Length: 560
Image (tube, rainbow, N blue to C red):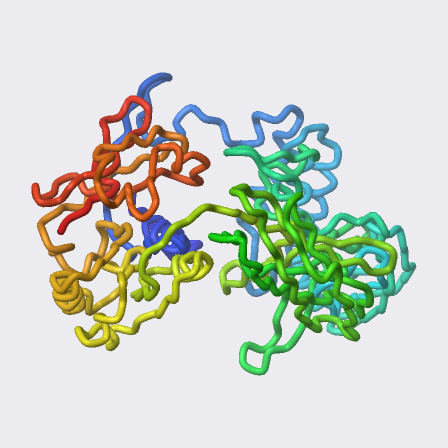
């Protein structure tokens, strides 16, 4: 490994490092390695290789019937290509395209599409379909601006533009003179039954490890096909070629300049609940505020909360009057749980224009992937649980990010999010417990100093709860009051048996009794980065393991 690719200007190890560094959420940024690097390959089956991994593998056009001459044309094009005059290759590319059309083979169809792209690139042909709307709803008018420019001497004529989704066609029959910008306005209407831009694998509720996709042609695509493509038909030096162009939102940012975003097809209104779950520890009513947002137009109607049997919601509905797109309002409801334990689904519904909508909106936006809109159901789980609690004040020192403060607040605790400067003996004394966020030992640069103060708080009668940490970039070797070592051990099976090692330990018996039943319905892995060595003064509470693996007893350790 480590070979250099002259056309790319990079070594393959540099490309690999850049690829690994794109795993942003995993925090595995990698520096590039340059120069020779050994990789080992063991041949298990097949003929031996002498020169490389592709020995004996035919990657030429000889493997395609009646296509030998195509390979010769390709080699001639490559040999004669001029970077300073790419348009000179267009005539030969058109000949190659004609030859590919005569070959009845899937590869030929795929390669002809690639040649069409090369023709446009070499002819410096630019086409764009844009709109000033970031989102549009089924049944609405979509104003589109179609632009085209030919920046070469290749004779090109724009015959027509067609919207396959709605069926409109605009006949143009205009030559694209060199460096002369052509603009046409289109106003198609989206079909009333058009599918929303929810990622195709999320349109139906998934089961454990399995997504349901009706259209098998979509499987394997990294994202949805273009929401509203425009098909441009051109005559390029005597050959008719069609190009499919995605319609995107085009805007201008005062700092970044021109901004492109995927066009989103959405419902006209969204309803966002403040949490994915609400836990009621008693029979008291609780206010739940729903954020209502108009997406693509003004919205007048009403909002309501549908609750499980036995739960009460007041008022029955709240008027909705949003006069422009992207306007927000907040609808407050009072939810009263039943007297006994149980759970169910709470659903937010907005009625407008004789239709009901129950979608929430989540936006994912990063420079390397752009803006994506998710539209999950506007639902949350509601749980009535018999919970006894001791204490009231909880301090929380953040780590890499979790929902612990909100969860504790839901069952009645008062939670104070701590800055490092807040971790002082006189301040900690007022807390019944202090919780460290996930990976606090990886993310808090002052954790070694903070831990000394936290242990002083423990010696004075306090309680500190630390969550999981990883082995990478631990800020201190001494985690906790007594020695322990974090490993990379994990239990990946979310349904793996959880065994209670110390059933009579106070951490499992008060103020609420915890048994193996409480671990049913667990989501994702049981745990990871388990301690695998610890001082005898630690007590192991839980044990679990994947099928066929050794027991992991370090999932929960307690010490005084």
